[in-house]
Length: 183
Image (cartoon, rainbow, N blue to C red):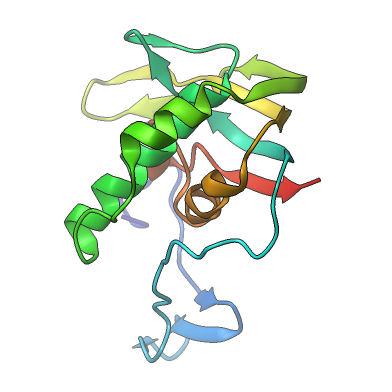
């Protein structure tokens, strides 16, 4: 891939010199060695220790979530929670121990009670080049921060999981990076 390049044909060539997981060397380009010792950390839905009634979600890279088959330019908590539940269930089904034992219907009802206390988000367009389609494509989403208020304790494990895996559409391109801070 580095020799062929990323993006438009003939551009974006690179050489991987080193890959780290924390402070563990996974790949050393100089020595051409690959080491996968103890680098995988299991993802879990850990129960929170304290009740959470206010929560800030920072959207570091564009978040792309759909509701009624339309990308949302303003993120409600029900939309965020449903995207998190779908993402966690899909990942656990494909790569974990199966779908987690969660009351999805109950969580969806609880999510409807959560309000947006402060919304400091905006739509941000990102352009990527598709070699397959031979064209530039817009893959925008919402960035910024949102503060939610309500009974959020049950949602914290899902959102913490999504901090590690990202959330929404095009996570493979690095989109949907979130950070969750109980307030």
